[in-house]
Figure: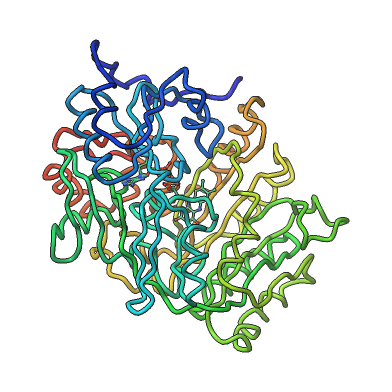
Length: 470
Ligand SMILES: Cc1cc2nc3c(=O)[nH]c(=O)nc-3n(C[C@H](O)[C@H](O)[C@H](O)COP(=O)(O)OP(=O)(O)OC[C@H]3O[C@@H](n4cnc5c(N)ncnc54)[C@H](O)[C@@H]3O)c2cc1C
């Protein structure tokens, strides 16, 4: 089977009305408009997940909020499907769909740090890496994606579970204000006092309510951290120990653990490449000596395959996850869980033995800490008390490769671990249907989201997302 070139959504895309004249839009926006036949078209329509191969009608590389507003008004007026692309890491590939007008924010990447206020004004096209560098120059940081290329537009409207989440919460917990273009093409400010309902909804409700062009974010005083990767042999005892220690650790320690085959990397001994390992990426934000004590229980779990934990500026954590920033093919299933049983651990270990790609991963993230200290009704991201995030990630490099074996590998393990799930993170949902979207939001949250949707987007202009029906 060849890779899917379209998703279930593309078949429902409305066709462009005859007589659509993009020159009208060209006269109204400063940004470039790219269409089929342009040299830049193939690059501009590409997403980070190479399984998607979509052909939009036009890609509008917005230069400003006004460009975004003009494009929304134009697409809406012409009855054209409208999508928004910031960093292009959409798991379901919904930021670029067949026949759509794509609002592409990749040129809107400005990051302005206010050192005195410890805040940053960040345009939505900036990536996680785009912020870490400039903020770090002032001894500041914000927890964003685990991979430098993940875009703020999608991340900071869905949640943002990052490398300091246990200490500083989700990215959305540090959102002070946002500039939003509504489905009418109006530009509004959403914060606790202006459009508070919209402000609540865009913190977890995804792209359903408008296009955010700029975020104002609180930064934390973070200079040097103790972090990097601790690589342990993959056994049931190691994974169980990781889950327990990571959950019990002080909030200063946030970890993301990948059960995977040891990849070639500067910190992995060459003769250990290919061994099944638990690769624990970690960031400790407290005092360095205390941090060494916090890592001790993890180091005691087994003789490490590699120990690359050291003092570093926060931004350097992205060097450890650099391979996943490169475009690749991916099939993703994920869930939150209150616990992970030995049966599920054994299923994951057995799955690694029959992996269809050397890049396949079962990922565990210990949640808790500051994530759980925010009340579940404070933002639209409500799943705050589950202890773990678990994902099955079928990953491979060549998108022309037959996807069927990878899909079967993911499906098989997913069926085994899924019964332990309790909710799902909207930003890691693929195209999995209505029931799973409902899993992303408790009923009371969903009801409130629909109310806000009816107020701000009654015609469902913003529907290429994990859609909240008005
Ligand atoms: C390799 C990889 C690593 C990841 N790591 C993490 C992680 O550590 N933590 C985490 O929380 N998530 C992570 N994610 C998930 C990530 O948060 C989502 O995929 C997110 O949607 C990506 O945002 P983007 O702007 O890059 O994506 P895009 O593809 O540009 O957009 C995805 C969707 O977000 C919405 N959207 C995008 N921009 C805007 C905007 N400006 N205004 C309103 N809505 C918008 C739209 O609905 C769009 O379809 C990861 C994903 C990948 C592929």
